[in-house]
Length: 351
Image (cartoon, rainbow, N blue to C red; front, side, top):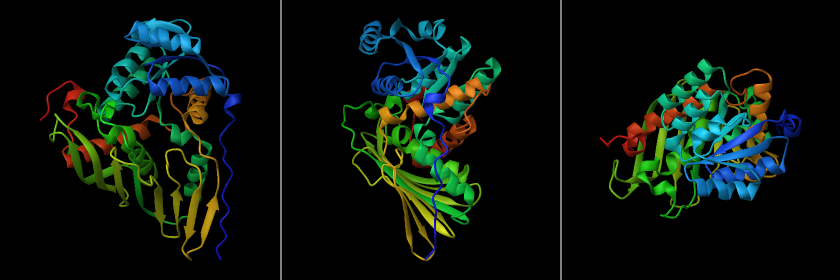
């Protein structure tokens, strides 16, 4: 029987991170979870919220004891805000991140950081030029359980890494924003971005993609893809086979295959809990950890941003901006292969 000892997480205690004053741009569902997480855990302070709707901003502020700003520019200009968490729908991420950066604010941008690799590049360049921190709130990679995955990969215990097989599906009703073409609808940017982020993190950038998609409504810019499957060839020759859907719940596991062993993250893998390693002799080895929901987990990414800023770094070690760009470059290639058109979300007609 092959022995396999799992490492302990090295994730720093979020309660030890320096305290920053956070402003939330966007009083929606994820903004609520972020505020609740920071107020329940760690040392970070949520002090303000901004929205184009003064009424929505005020209702959010009343709920969480914050200052309300009727406009994102007012939030970005606020003297009592150190860092802006951009929590709006995806197509607004670029505009709001650039506005906050222009006011000298650090930014943590909800995933995906943008909806194209070019947008990720634009945010990174603006932050570097202004000398402020910018990061993507890809919460999975900041959690303790994912640090165990990272250590197992770095140890070489899986052997030569050959591929990834993974899926992520949820049922989202037809009145969900994921069905809106003008908001880059479909599962790719909401759910599939986790698949692409972790696959490129493990296997490197993508050099070719084969993909197909199904649609709600007409294909192209006037419809929204409901599911997409893809096989991606990565720069080192490894491949990933991925599927995402908003039409139903799937196992949502993530398996990394190597020449000596495979590692599977229990579903839903974006909130990693238990891990299973199967070694070449067929023996199964388990690591158990409680799954964390957003309220229990989002404060880890805020603490990582705070530590980076305190150390004078412009991005986190856990998820540098190049990682965000690689994932969106993979998304660009996948969309091209599958014929998914984000024209309305990019402010242009479809092809």
